[in-house]
Length: 385
Image 1: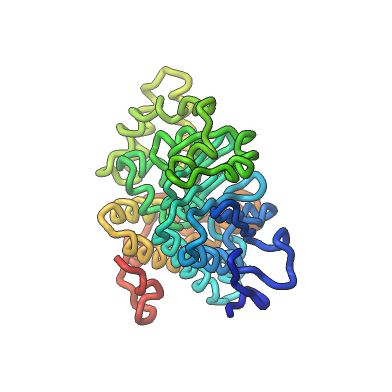
Image 2: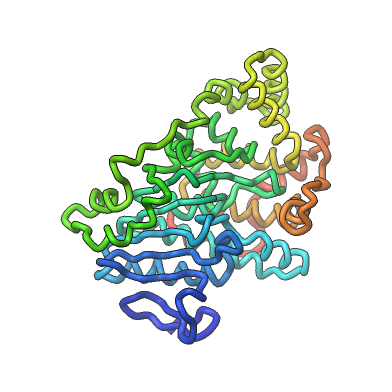
């Protein structure tokens, strides 16, 4: 018998916490017509991954993997957000208090995502709302990733003094290198249609049509499960809007070249802005430059290096690298100041360790990528290659 805060039990309906109603739980679980429906249920906290939520999600996913009566899994979020990644507030408060338990949350988050990656059943991710970091990474294994007109994707990283987390070096590493660097360095928000165009999502459905999926799920034809699941969520009348990102892909390819340092990237963008006469493109240049100049100079360099290294790594190697980078970002980097400014105090005026890119100390940067020496074995050593 497992514990999730209080006594828990496992039956055919999955792990459940005794003495609590499902609506009280951070993760809601039910089965409809042999399909498990997992709902992230912390809408007031943007469905961020708290320690309790990570533990419960892991139990539910493990249960789905061994229960032969469950043929497929649907993951969705309650409210206007799918999942805003790891709970930054919890990490910040623990780090500021000198409580090393935050390390366990990070390790458990990566084990959760890896466990989901290994699930040998059809998975549908309904990303009807905002997703960032680990929220995106959690469901990149899904066989059907659905977005709507409400969907927004963002990789925060250097904007909050953080590193690529939740598998960002892995899922962004599948994109063209220039697009990977653009999304990772700028923390640009992309739409659901953009996500389909980038390969981070598979299908579009209107938010209103998604609300009636459970009725259609009861009529599911199990003979062709993957196609039937698609028909449950996606109607021929649902046509994805045009991607807003496509118009700027030539500029992204030109100014986010893999061989450019962050300084060279900004220099290229500045030159492009000075030559550009088109109003929409000038606005894109300005927004891109403003983002890069506002982000942590140290973490911009860490992000760029991590993304480029991650393209050559296995999934497990990516997760171990990200875990190490997260530790260093919290202990010796800009994480605490970035979260203070953008999440805790909300003044949006972080005082970065290095004020400019020119000030970044190469020895500090190198320390982020030094070999793991904290303890043996590595906390994620058990993840298979």
